[in-house]
Image (cartoon, rainbow, N blue to C red):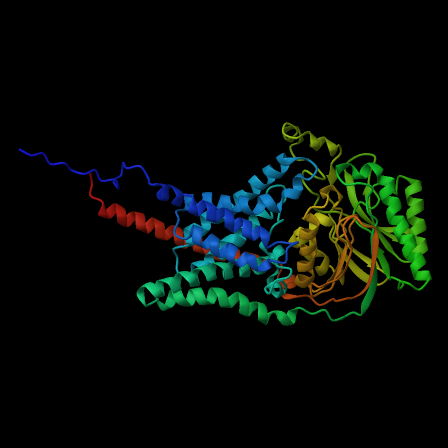
Length: 537
């Protein structure tokens, strides 16, 4: 009698996974991280804006067909791959803790986008819904918590890109939507091409969706080109931007506040001599950066005297960035319009002060993790009025540093009559990091969005003068004392983006919500069908 030996099925459910199978588990997580890192590489100072397209294509491959819970996890990895390197400058002087915490929290919004993209990825025309979901998540990130943190909007990486004219159509939401849509469309086109090679046929509907997802953003950008106009509707103005530089890098740069003030005074007096000698044209007005006088000139007569002397020397209205210290209450990050004959005549208080930088929310709790919060010993308060100064007949809109990241803060100045925008900034606390280049790109996008010249006077980073078409016509080097003088066009007409305000973003959010609702309804119906088909126990 012989025995029969039954071979063990190595592929059964209890079999150990092969090395290849174990490796495959990491393919999608790795792709998610890579998609985020490619998106980071598309941002300045690198001129690689086009990398955003393969970033979204890879993200589409990673998320399509996944369950929402898996989409959340994969989206979080993509968020970390993007935001960890993008925001590394936030830990430049305070250590890795705040940087890692900020990136970890902000990546949750990308995770939510991943969940939503996975949910809509089985729908017809899914690239459109997926791009809408991305913009919905960006909109949420720009508003909460603590007033939001829009740094890293996809639009801000497109200052050199072919899609930039769309900023004039619907602002950063429409520009970001176009980039995401084109990237998802490229992935869907590749997927449909592979299906065609395998089967020889492709349904017309999905093929049309893939084609339009690529063609609509490109065609829209070409159609929007006439909106990019740098003609001088209201004549021109000669503007000077002063970069005085700081004594040293780091959080303690303002320990030598008088030195910072004196640097800006000296550069302005040098400009006055150059004008007198005919080496520079006479500016119509001069713009100093944020924190150029951290000594309150209202409370310190010596600071007021040196500022007044410099303004009298150049002989034109000058905007001074000062820290105003009232006897009681909160500090004010203030821009002062200083007239050469009448002294200070108008002020603008920064309306969106920076959480954990200019004020500390939940101070006692945050102190547990990082004692650097006590460097901000007295919180700054927010202003309430839109900043538009009349400088020698030119209406100049003011958005101080961090405010340039917020759509409303810049748009308000234009709807209140600004013919030119100034973004005075202080980047000294972030050293030689990429932060100043990222912020400069925002100002270039704002120039096209509202068809305005933008002047960026910075204490120590990269100061620049930008035309309404986004072109930088003059710029400084980092941590180098300098003065930029340029004639720029003035404009008063409003782009569709300016006139429409938040409407384009609301419509894209509605598209995302519609897609999520449709996907949810389909999931409920599918579960009901499965329940009917499953026999009762």
